[in-house]
Amino acid sequence: MYVEQKKDAFTRSSLNEIAEKLMLEEPNKEKWTPFSVLFKPHHNSLTGNYDINVLIAALEDKGKNVVWHDRRNGASSIDLDGPEDANLMGILLNVPVRMFAGLWKSRHWVTLRKIGGVWYNLDSELVAPEVFEDAEKVREFLDYMIGHGGEVLLVMNNK
Image (cartoon, rainbow, N blue to C red):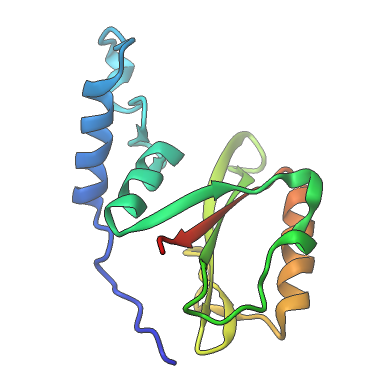
């Protein structure tokens, strides 16, 4: 089964709207400072990064459920071999990155998705999606990321 990737499934505008809504709903609203223009509670305008609360809300709007993976279990406990219409829709990784010669530490979101029976690394930093040889290579990649401070979130289809 071929699954077409929807280019505008999540737009900057829709994610900004979710971030603003979450900010208004926060019980401990922060006081405005000059830095508030760049560093909002759920969106960093300087890096363009959104926090997990925004991503979870956006995915829930699409009928998905996000589950934190217990990193102590490693990737071997994730069912990567099931059919595409099974419960696991994809994987979100939040990985540490260093920029500007290591002076700036940040985090980056990476998506892994099984399309047409093949797992892909859909990292926006790549020139093109990278194909994983098989599910075992996906597990090796996930275990490497977990070992280097990555967080794994499973995106599940609501059934």
